[in-house]
Length: 66
Ligand code: SF4
Ligand code: SF4
Image (tube, rainbow, N blue to C red):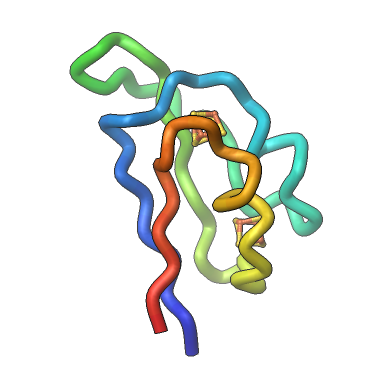
């Protein structure tokens, strides 16, 4: 089973991944990273590891490993 990891320090809070995720597994956390952006958090129980968030994120927050 693939694993999705988030490097939340890179997140710029743009929301692209949140709007793209087909199962609504992503949302803003309400916490700020070191650069002052409300970063995205991930519900692994909902995630299907489809990779769309990885594709749309302009800041390379997501990593998928086998
Ligand atoms: S891998 Fe797919 S299902 Fe999982 S958070 Fe990203 S867009 Fe959503
Ligand atoms: S697309 Fe990337 S930078 Fe934008 S909110 Fe999602 S994780 Fe953060």
